[in-house]
Length: 181
Image 1: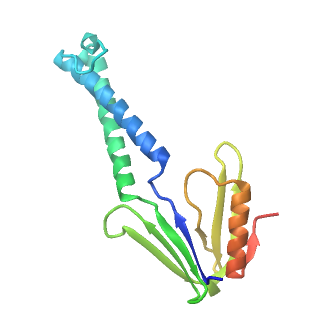
Image 2 (image 1 turned 135 degrees about the vertical axis):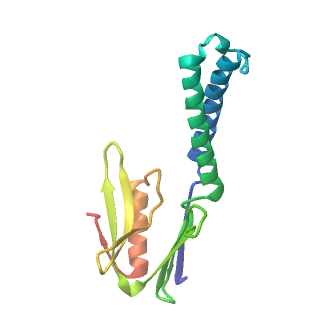
Image 3 (image 1 turned 90 degrees about the vertical axis):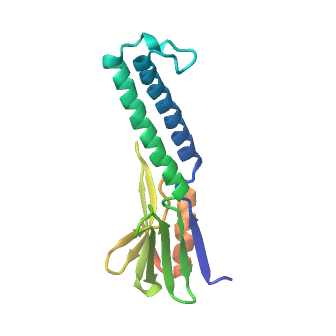
C-alpha cells in the first residue's frame, strides 16, 4: 500500500467556464457591433436593422454593455488560460507532511503552497449545507482550530462521494472524522 496520497484539484479549466466565456464573448460582440452600427449607420451584423437605432441613448448603451461583456469574457479566458485554482493535495505519511498546492493569478503570489505536519492535524471536518446554494466541503482541521478547505470550488459533490472521500482521508491520516452522523 502506498504511503502517499495525491488528490488532483480541477481549476478554471472546466466545461462550464469555457461555455460562459464563449457565450459572454459572443453576446458582448453582438451588443458592441449593434451599438457601433447605430453610430456609423452601417450594418456590421447581418440579419439586423441596427442602423435604425438612435445612437443616443440606445446605441451608446449597447456599446457600453458590449464593452463590459467583452472585458468580462477576456478576464474569464485569461483565468482559463492560467488555470487559476488548480493544484493538488498531497498527504505523505512517510515524511509526515501534508502539502496543499494551488495556482493563482500571475504575479509574485501565483503559487500557493502550504505544508503542514500530520501531527498538527486534529481531524477531518465535513460541512454539508443544503438549500438554494448547497455546500459540501471537506476541511482539514488543525489543533489550533484552523480549517483548511480541501475540496474544489464549483459543483457540489454527491453526498456519497464526499462521505467516501472524507472517510478514506481520515483513515489514511489516522485522525477522527467530524460532521457526518
